[in-house]
Image (cartoon, rainbow, N blue to C red; front, side, top):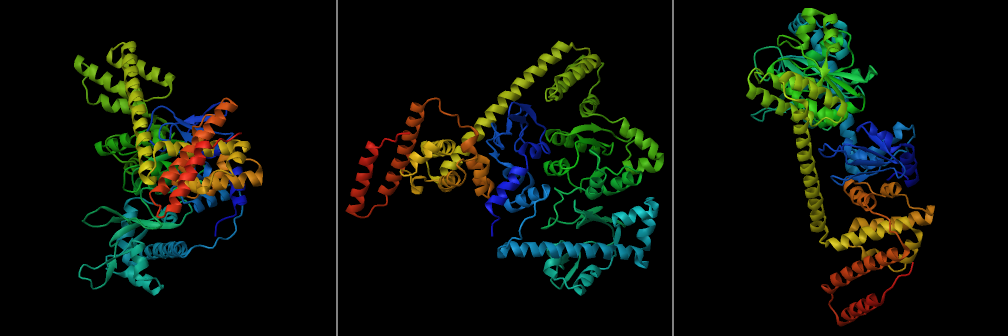
Length: 592
């Protein structure tokens, strides 16, 4: 069953959309609206608008729109039910127990089994480490100077070299081989004779989600072989592109600045050194999903990747992802090509603390990285370096910061500040032109997609949107249209639904609030189309213009319906009826 609409609206009203979106997107206020960079497409100029009065968002670049539920569904990849549950929990509203469909219930039950199975697997690996079979792995942990209490807190374990010890253990616990495969813990033998454990002869690192549930594992091989690190595959409870190692512990630190490192051992060493606000990506490049996960808990990030070429390149790739999601970003690296784990073991916690204090703004890091490619004693290199630096500076929002770094590049190269500023302005203009050109292309592409989907002409789409907008904004318009417009007059299914829901809201509340209207729709596609109705529609200036707009839009829809039916008529009576409808349409005049 669906949650009561009144409850859904109560939850929406108690979750201010500006407050929710601000957790993901930095917003600046302008009157009743707030503006920021759209989280749904790449842009440099803010075109993402959040209206605090209407509790509604709209992007003038890509057309994304909706209410607080729509936003959470897009950002977190939630379905409507999950968005309701998350927002209800946030404002401490207890939801009634919902009866799940057969498919949904089966998935919930599968996830529950997988969570339990991973918890038991984690304990199994931990117990194996403590046994005689784990003696070599324990020596390795000692060699890496991981303290016993820290190893226990992280649940570090050992997967023996035997082919199916975990498989046998989970079978005894009543789990099916299908569940083990779905959890990524066992694999079928190539000859089809049975199954074997995915992880063998590896030091095991349980991966916890934000609720401290084991959702997967990372395993480091303890002998020769590849890969050095092996992660659980994608499962119904685990995605390495959305999880961060150590998230549950960093979350408990309550810090707003987090340290981001590359691997398991780096994360554990930093944590053991007393810096608990640290997480690591799971063997994959830091991406937008990681950033959105991080954004729930942190505002600033210190990037601490290895200082070798691979680590530097990984940091350079992570920086724009973090900046686009509104993080304050600083960067530090350990010297001499070491990783954080090796540095802490050699130099200690105090020296590591100084590394963090000395972390530089990401712009300084990017400029230092490109400087390595040039010999500034050569005039041609100074020109190329200044041009490349200008590209970096052109992406900065803060004019003050940009001026500071422009002066620094000028000092380094001897190029006049005014020349660098001119180059930056040219690059910004070029980027703005490209942005608006791309935005227009996306709008046209989306419009074409809608037309192809509904087999409609643009005029019919616009007529539907105009009538819905006007009927929702003025009761007089709805009352005038209600006896004339039928559901069948709206060729687009989602607009048919909206017309009916607008009537319900007028009758029940004597008002239609767009953010509440969206509560009737549970898919992001439907919410997007309804959101567009209200996002960019200007109010009419005069009564005469309003009346004219309504009459023209109604006639467009009625004609489209008559033309559609004319291709389906089978009898002379049906033809006569359509002729009569067309004659009446020519005489139709709606007074408002």
